[in-house]
Amino acid sequence: MKLVHDFLVESAGQFPDKPAIISDGATLSFRAIHQASDCLATALQGAGISRGDRVAVFAENGAAAAVAIFGILKAGGVFVMINPTTKARKLAYMLNDCEVRAVIAHPVLSRALVPALAETLSPPAIIWTQCPTDECVAGLVLSEIIAGPHTTPSDPGLIDIDLCTIIYTSGSTGDPKGVMLTHHNMVNTAWAISTYLGNVPEDVVICMLPLSFGYGLYQIITGGQVGFTVLLEQGFAYPWQILQDMADHRVTGLPGVPTIFATLLQFAPFEGLDLSSLRYISNAAAAFPPAHIRRLQSVLPGVCVFSMYGLTECTRVSYLAPDRLHDKVTSVGKAMPNSEVYIVDEAGRRVGPGTIGELVIRGANVMRGYWGKPRETDERLRDGEIPGEKVLYSGDLFRMDEEGFLYFVGRKDDVFKCKGEKISPREIENVLHEMEAVAVAAVVGVEDPIEGRAIKAFVVPREGAALNESDVLKHCRAHLENYMVPKYVEIRDSLPTTESGKVKKSALASAGAPQSPAT
Image (tube, rainbow, N blue to C red; front, side, top):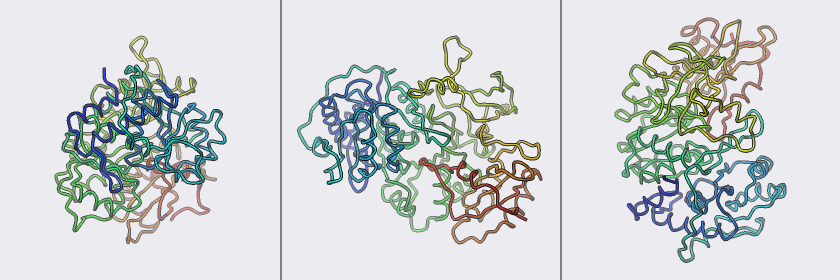
């Protein structure tokens, strides 16, 4: 049996002085994080936190957040990462929903936290990551806790089926749902990811993704498991500085999402930067446009590109091995180690190669369920083929080829009918991304007074590129069937994104159709 915080304990023993986290000019070794998280765990237990209690972390990416994660686990708690951009109303909902017993927060976020606390049903204990300001409520101070003598927490008696974390979904279609993941879930997933990425202790992996997002969080968890260094950035606001940091710290791994890669590619060919240490790039969260993959391969020859697919309810599902990019570039690969996937029709029956259906996942990566939401849990976790087994219905449409490679078609909610034909937005987006002048593109169905439902494309040009609606339509007519050509095209400077960096299509769809179609 292994627990997630055992990763840190083992790496601290094997690589005590090796940098574990580099963030905001500070470097913490594995031993430093191990000892700091011990002290925090002791303080949490002193505040009444015991096995299974939920503790929220409301802070920017940084060393304090990493210490908080492992400290909560050592105390026996369940950590709940909350995006630092979360507003008071949503924050209060999360704190109440999973009955948070304590909050570890940065003082700069008191503007959202203090009013949220006023709405909590049972006020949690507060630990500020550094000296609080006058606007903060009373609480302990993490920097003071870890500055004191090293203390060892008592054993909370965890086993690997105990909850490890609750990760909240974005809540784009209602209140966010808390995905429950056990230690067993996370240990298995970290092992699987590090196995196919080939992570080694010598790796330096940059993380600019929020730790409230599973993809970002697993950089910390996997770093602890393997013993590699994580260069933890607070965000992606300054892409050139990110590239400079990658060069300065000899980064070997770059995880990202399509919007990040689209921005970085605008700086290609990265003149004046030595990125020769970069070994791999990985993409998840949203479909990786083949055009982006080809451009990355062109400007970073020799770097392995992993196209992956996952969802919060099981973290990661599949990956495409880099050596199959030449013939499977539109695929998200096969199931990750120790898991199985298959595709079913609307009656839940397995379908053969080439048939579109819903993807089903079985394995140790599948969540326990949604916190406090049995109906929603039953909709996603259904009886499998083995008696007593629960499998995860993804809500995503896929097809599988004869070799077992998966091809993402779209969210069940995204696919729509236009003129009697089923429209897969991703297929149109891939064609749009083939345009040299296009940085980011998104396609949605919008209400239309004549057709009922029409195709609308939103396009962001590359910096300095000239692009108009006619250019977009001409390209689409040359590369798509007539029924897939957008009726409407809108050129924008940027597109709205979720906390995890995915394009927020619900916001685009609500924009509706313009008064006149593109011509």
